[in-house]
Image (cartoon, rainbow, N blue to C red; front, side):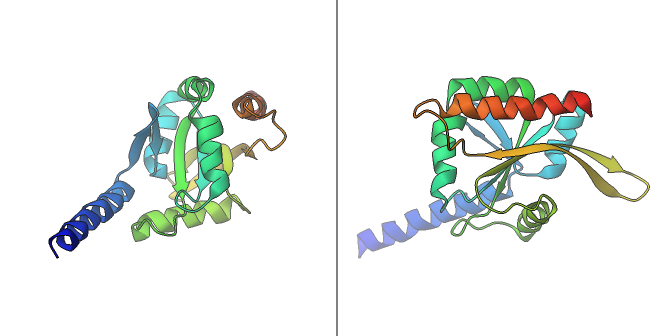
Length: 173
């Protein structure tokens, strides 16, 4: 009975931590800050001049999303590239982890806006606010996903080739 009590307490702590994590506007993973709030990411994007790199993911159920994390996002090449070039925004669609209604709405609105068909999908874009109409204007640069044709063990290289091609579009806009 005592072990069941400890198990319930442990579950409660883990569950409440997951809810709190979803309510934060960012989290750090592998020395990268991933924002979860579009407005905060937009603020940083505007001040830095860097585009937003939005990851549409199913963190607690999508195998390809985990594979992209391990094969690309955790690699030193991606970490250095991301710090130099983009503002990271995670748009998560979990099945187990609870999210606030506001976060769910934000993520679903962006999913529909960018017409995302599957996970993982990465979009790069700029956002500007139109104060007269009180709307956000998106300037999309392009999207990519898991580098399926990459040489095993070199997925980060193929991903960054695609990402740099997308970034090159920002100079032509």
